[in-house]
Image (cartoon, rainbow, N blue to C red; front, side, top):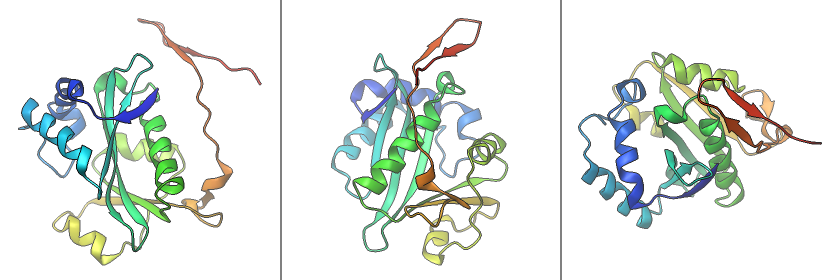
Length: 198
């Protein structure tokens, strides 16, 4: 698994998740009407955009699996919004967790952010289970300027990761965690095998 810049060749596979109602039904934007041309335009705009970072999550063979983003990068308050969308093919295979960890590290180590936040619809049980499983906790005190971007949405669950030793994954310090990339071999119908030596 890797992160890289979005490329034109990703557009058809990006269109795949925009048309997948199981992925988009609880998102704030209407992705269902997107075309391949829209995806290509997004990829081109991402090359010049300094307020948002959009990267491709790809397999070891460089196949596009999804997009992970830091949006609304606020250099004054040192914060940004996290977002991710992946293809059905990538679900349950570690791509979401990999992409999330890598972009959080990028935000903290390269962009020197203090906090990364995001929200999901409470109806999006798959996303809520994912974040809860990985130790994130709901953020109850959300700044008004962030809430204004989601005016009209009332069923949102907010999360935050802070770049310090006192906060982080809810009550769990971010710096206590370390990400290991473990080689995984997938099979057609018999699951996956991961291994490591240590």
